[in-house]
Amino acid sequence: MGFKDSDLQFLGYTIRRELNLTLICKPALPGLWDMARSTSPLGKTSSLQGRSPIRIIEPDLVVRTLMHGGLFRHITGKNFLSPARTVRELKVSAYLSLHGIPTPEILAVRILRKGVFSHIEVVSRLVPDSVDLLTWLESPCTDSGELMEKAGRIIRRIHDLGIYHADLHIKNLLLDAGRDLWVLDLDKAYRFDSLPAFLKVINLNRFLGSVKKWLKQSRIHLENGWEDSFLKGYGAT
Image 1 (tube, rainbow, N blue to C red):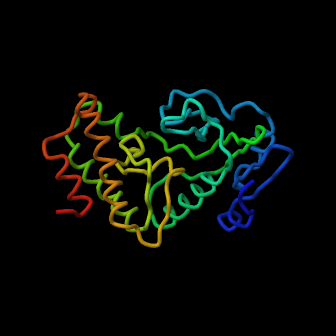
Image 2 (cartoon, rainbow, N blue to C red):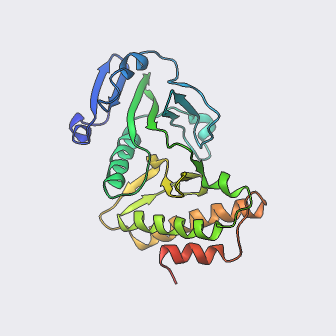
């Protein structure tokens, strides 16, 4: 399957296999195995929005189906040649959590082999009373500058930990009821011993570009000076 069990067992996961099914799972979800043996999508359709299709396992689990992005996403869809990207996501997620970066706990991964391809679903714990930053900023608010400063601060923290989030945009930051930001969708994240400066710049431009895109379309509302607030949070001058 493209990974060794020992790669994940030290993170607290167990691995079960049966024919074309592999389930990587935390012991806290012993009943998921029977559910995973069905070829149907895990969970039920949800109104939650995300870059990938989102489903819910009641009462508090979110299921994300991995999908390709880019120019060929309509051709490749959810077909992956290996689960390497997901294994990397599990490691990065655990590393960020260990260092106090809020990111939803990944409890399980289901990998279904379809010929030479794999279909992959990731099961995470639901963050209650939360909304992505794009959705929050769609309505006028008086603290958008503060939120952008928080965004700069959390991005600086993950950079200091050597993490490059290749899909870092405004929808991949989640705002919870306590006004804290969470980092989402780490399947395109990479860990370096020390993050090179040019990757930091690419990451910052990626995030700021996503903000400016929605701002230009009048989709979101931001206070004047929001970019200065973001750079203040990041620690730039």
